[in-house]
Image (cartoon, rainbow, N blue to C red; front, side):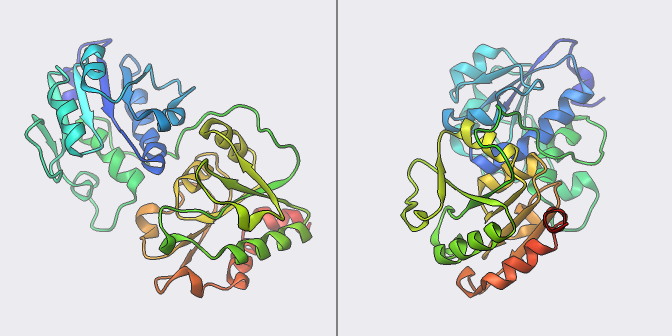
Length: 304
């Protein structure tokens, strides 16, 4: 008998997913699979405040929990699933009060777990690199959800603050080695204007967007960024969290990768083109990204 078969009807489950933006988005398929298999479960997600918006409005999530062991324990879960793996999340799991405490066996510390989940390849029965969405979903498969196709991310947004046909360009990333040069993003924006698509540069609160002053820049909360991305006709950006948000809304995407692996971090379940530059994104000409854009059906529709 698997763990989910042993949980009483109406039990509570706590999922610990503290950060980051992309990981939070890619956790939503696992939550959806768990809720689909056990609709009676009340699922709480422990997440840092700055990423809590990702789970807002999601009917699969009964409660967004503060990222503290007291909040998780106060939820009174029968099952606590740690999808984060750091030392802080280990303490949260250990002190959750849950009868079943699960996490991946390859986490650096596993003393908090009485269920140690094998690597995703073992759970999925594959011998290949797995995407992060598959990796996270494999945890719920190991607990008893029947193995199946992993769905796309599940986000819910307010109405977009921008009307008409527009593209979202995200020129920022976690490090310089993951950023395509700003001047090439600007040149690409001019191509989009020729195609009658309005380019909008998405910037976070701490991003320096001065290089894009000639174009419209959108700087708002994560909730507002989610709304903007939800209705874009295309997304072009570096490998980063907003790329995963766009994919969750099924926005056709072109995503640029430096030394990270698109097999693990590429857009999940949306029409996409991947531009890979292991020698550095500075070597990627605008023409290569334009060609990738032209292969997307959304651009074919724009030309029609």
